Image 1 (tube, rainbow, N blue to C red):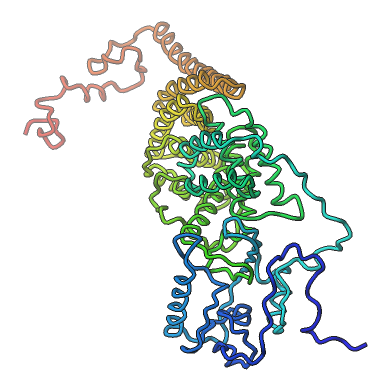
Image 2: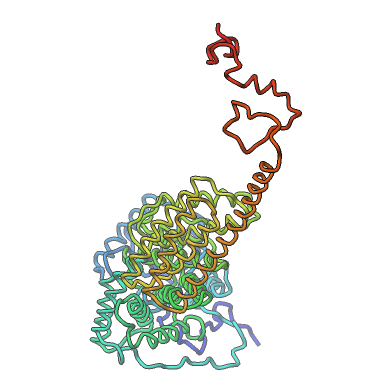
Length: 605
């Protein structure tokens, strides 16, 4: 049997449900518009800009001045919005091509991009995307096909991943959320969310959210990505509302969980920026309402999904496979950055609080949002950036890194009450680590901690009156009491009363089993501290009592010295040369005893 040529082997599977984009059209071999890299290497060029060969090898796809094609299917154009005019885009690419001819030279061995992203549906925010390394088993078949000049290179797909003998389970279809919530519910609860929560994290655009919500009721249809975002917004809006909880809050939370399961628990996974936002919102809601493990896992899932769609990489660092492309605006690029760094900072904070390992991704090139500065600001990302990684105790620089973190957080100026509480929460993480490795704080570092505690206690009182159920309004007063007791200074013990009063006030307003348990535990710790202090005072008192008994029992053998009359409780032993004490007696000295008299100030000159 004759073997088929390598480039004619069938590369398509029967199941084409994953890749809905049509294959690239076969072009005639004699094409007039061939790029310079293909001409120099004498390989077939498809006339695209960039062409498939340049995409595969990451060459600089450059055409002669008269042969610049208008195709730009593989590029990202910063723009004002997703509806950027195509003529404007074409002009932008013409300028880009001309600039590249002037300033770029064709390299025979270009530096290849390490990552590849496939984008198959809709826009860059809601599109179902896959991110992987170029050297992965997923990307290798396609890379090989491009290297072999295949007419239809294999798509980015997990070929031969397993035996495929079992049918994939389908997710359970639940009731549409539009059937039990109204536009008025969305307006009321979303206003609470954007005022209380999004003002701290800033991961959702208010205008975009309202536009997408209105479109849902107009069409009576909602995609899974926006539905999970909507559920998170409504759940947090209900939690932070001063009114009783929304009647459907529990259903909304469960609905969000079921949808988020589709990001990892089923074969037909859904991955987009919306699902990263959904995991972030779920992590915040779980942190405010339930046990620490699930909130930490949710924050970790946000990082995993972010990596799955390449949020940790700048778009300029990623090669994008052909498909149905849309223009990505500059606003969307900024949104990607903010969503990723919010997920990273949330996971770092939750991991430090819970004593778990944070998710650390490799080769992060995603830039910080432009509003973030090294000095910090009124922003969650700015705050957590100042918090050092809680490095291992074996690191010789760990103590210095941690104490520097206290100083950096102390310089941060913010007026937002939630951030004041989060700042105290962050510095408590640092203090606990320092105490564990046995580092004694300086006076300045202690003063910074006490100052942050004072500000945080005032913020907790304020937020409790507004029914802002941040996890910190209970946690910060409680851990303030713990830290103040551990510092064990007069200043810290003086502030202890204020911390206890704040905790009592919060418990009065938010009366739950968790808050009552925290109050009982704090009271117990103060009681134990008092008992320990009383024991120490009793030891000191016994010493003083022993000296008093000795004074009464021992007869006076010598009259008290004039110079020591202020110490009547002590008796001098008889074997001491009392002439030495006469030397110290001013009345015994001859003449002026000022420093100016005599060689040693004992006699007149």
